[in-house]
Length: 192
Image (cartoon, rainbow, N blue to C red; front, side, top):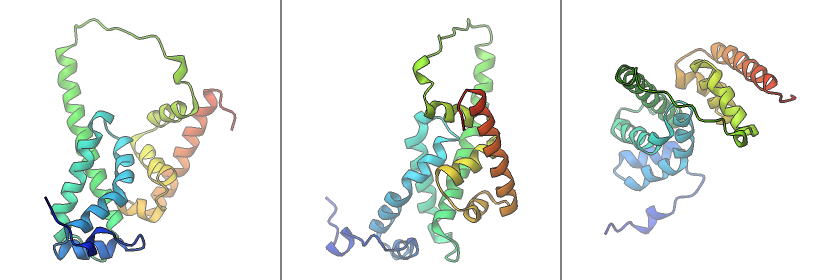
């Protein structure tokens, strides 16, 4: 049984990521648990938009494992959250590439298998489903920008840092992503 000193059990909510990172680097594993609790939902949301939902738990763990291992190399001048979301982006990209390669192999194997089509489930036509389908119709670049900025409420400057693109590109993609999603929703009968 791990005995945690009382001083490390409860951290004030106002403790910064920088403070927690410093404590991690000094050997305090509880600090990393606090970072995990603070950021895991947003990491999950980034991965959810780009990866298979069945893999989310494993991918979230992969992101935080990479962060833990890379913490000694983390530049203290950068924001921890930006660095972490960049790791999530990279994990998602790696997973998408691996899945695409797997699908290609599976398509070759099942090329002659009979295809079954399920009747559409009318109950799934609620608003959240429409938004999810609308997001699926967007390009990967537009979907990513929209999810990070509008759904996860990450500031444009931080989105630019996470994706390694200029802020102007974020603004442009955000404008076009919103327009494309609006157009999709209107074609589906949603009055905006």
